[in-house]
Image (cartoon, rainbow, N blue to C red):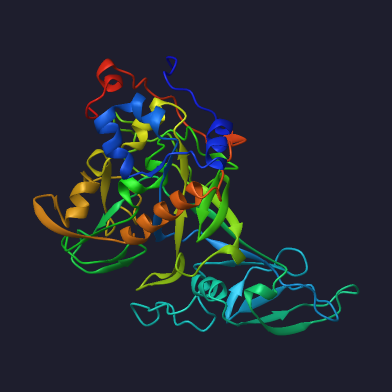
Length: 406
């Protein structure tokens, strides 16, 4: 890669944040700045770009330390508000998954099941300050003799509560349709037959990993907005796969990178962690996620200027191709087309609907921007970047001199 004309460091940007001198804009605001000034001038002017998304993220959960009972118990089975938690850890450590339903949920026995309450709803209740009920059992040991324990508690009473999500923030994702003759119920929502509707997810030009397609600034230790509080990228998310086809601008053309994230649940807010019931499918958790991207150079500025028109989304048939893992993509559409409400698929005009809240995605990017401007949120340099792939040299005279992105 050729030498950049702009070269900033995390330390320099953090010093500007501390002094109240940093220039911070959202991922939507940077688009016009780059168009008007070009990548080099934008990188010299702007220090941080903030992103945001608020979507169902099924691979989520909380790690809870319950504190010891008297006499103590080594929990082997547990339920919180009748939702099973995983107890195969130390004595009173539990992991509650967002998609776990209550033990008495009829599931899909009455089809389509409603899945009214599950792990994601427990998490929302906890951050809302509500009381929840623990039921725990054990086989008993010499050091942990107790065999049954029940308690009612709130989040503030716990020793530790960590939101620990193995896979969040998917970089691009499928637009789901259904080409079969009957309605189907999926984690992308109900899909009507004969291409009756199309559902999509992520915030397009505001989405974190779409603004840093090659993960030049995001990695282990990156400080982020998570669920209304401060969190961190802990590792590449499960299913992280950078080796997918990419457009000329570097943006993946199918699901690619993911983030494993964690943060103190006690800092978080129920507006940005909401239990979700997906008809006929199951429970989930909608998670608010925002990642700050430092404009270390003009290359990063160009990537952050990505627009909905630049992002190609794969349209996949969830009636046949997805459940049979054929890998077939019907076509690609842009986020701009999706957000207009209608796309064309195999000659059909198909109405679209998002699973992502753009209102809250914008709130997250704006909130993170305000935290940084106030000096309350400093950037962290990753100890290791996410696994990536070689990238093309984006530099060209027209790109560096200004004008619109080609």
